[in-house]
Image 1: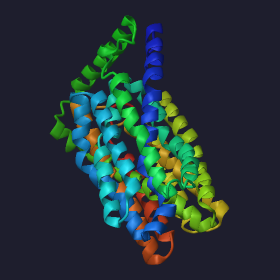
Image 2: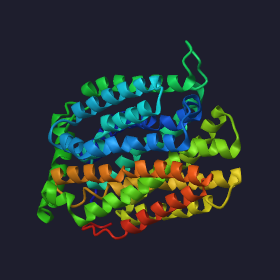
Image 3: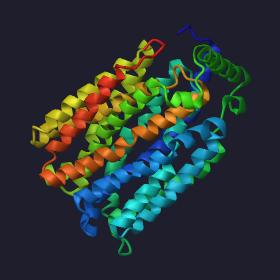
Image 4: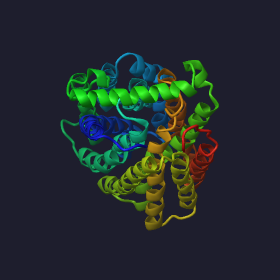
Length: 425
């Protein structure tokens, strides 16, 4: 990467300051609405008589709805309007989250989670595609890392908030119902704000000075032409490309480990420690605090070195080891240390992983590929929680589930190393 001009440095700073904090807030709200069920179930399952298998299936069915609409959502962001699509997604999922406060039966639980996944489909791949409209390849892993740091931060901040909200008992409405109600409203509000605040592409950015706007437009146009010189993939060719299919498999097994652990972690900690709901939500903060630092460092180091594959593979393999050891050790202290390592590593690989799909593919092909990777990969979000619940109910232990999650992380780490990437990785 050559030396940046002063105009380039100013443009990078201005774009990052304008977009990353807002996208970060959007993803915090998105992730809270996706995983607040993991905290709600500490009270909800008992109140509604849900078994571990019911919770595991309901937690995971979110990703079936997600799967169906991912690819169209990513293409809409590329070809139509990121601003309008992101706003639509947020408003619809916020409404569904609010409606979850009124659940009474497992059928309603399954339906609400499925619809929530369908409503949110396209948000994450849409943001990844959106970032390619504003950040050069050389800056992309760091930008993705800053955006995706919302995952650990939402858990660090969301865990104690969930614990406090679940202590509310207003108007005869249990705390877990208030959790859904009060965490759904911000998504609707921010969806409306997104329409006014976001700009689809640099050419339309009145908030950029002319010289900075020209610099980023020229840089991205140069990158686009460079990719076109080495790649002529259509959308359908991209979806059948060997590396795209490998990336989808990598993400499937990585997501299996991530959601299999994160959606069950509050329940696991409560049963291991016997602590109160509030204390469990506080304990849940620790693994994600570690993950935040590791994710940001790994994205920064990957951009600095230009290397992607090993920066994704090593955290996945370390997570596999930690999850495998968690099946053996049952003491609270050792378990917390292993959960922290596993959770941190299952977050740290993501910025480097998401810098890979856009390396050689053209814009529409890359958008479709990102949508497919996220769509297929997030089926692991169904497999992880569901299989964990099934194995827990069948064996009366979490050990078999940890082995399952460890296997997924290990497979994911190995598959990353089989990628054939044309740039330096």
